[in-house]
Amino acid sequence: MEGQSVPVSVKVFGILNTIFGSFGVVTSPFTLLAMRRTVMVYERFDAGPLVLGWIRLSLLISPIIAGVLLATGIGLLMKKAWGRSAAVILAYISIGISIFNIILILSVFAKGLGGSESAAAVGGIIGGIIGGTIGLIYPILTAIFLTRPDVKAALERRSQG
Image 1 (tube, rainbow, N blue to C red):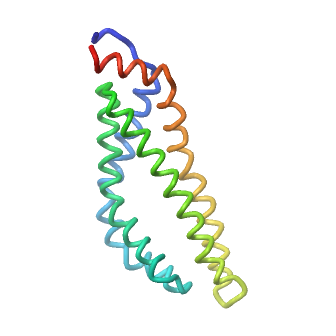
Image 2: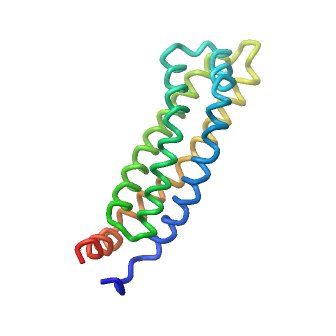
Image 3: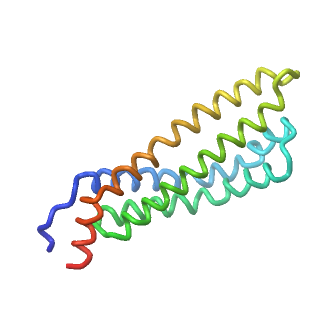
């Protein structure tokens, strides 16, 4: 069974998930150290307690998500079916979180339009939309490539063999 080939997308996403996950794990402490500053930006625009709670929660779970991404990368490089399944689930979760964050950013920074913080609000909206949209690209590609029938079948064959 070891000689059976799998689509190249498995190796590509395995490498990318390992790199991105490793980077996330390494940089997570810095993200957590900057949490107060991040929260202060949202407080400046009178974000409510639910928004501030979500910001804190998302910063706290980011190391866990990075660790899962790293694990899926290793699983894909080992050509394990669980690596593909976990990568796809994580991709869908990431897409949902990214869309939620875009909506959240728009709602928070829209409050600052027209006031003394108008320029900062416009910057926040533009940055949030562009950053959020760019952040959607990788999980969408992951979901597209790793849900292909040939990828799924190849990894399932290997795990049964």
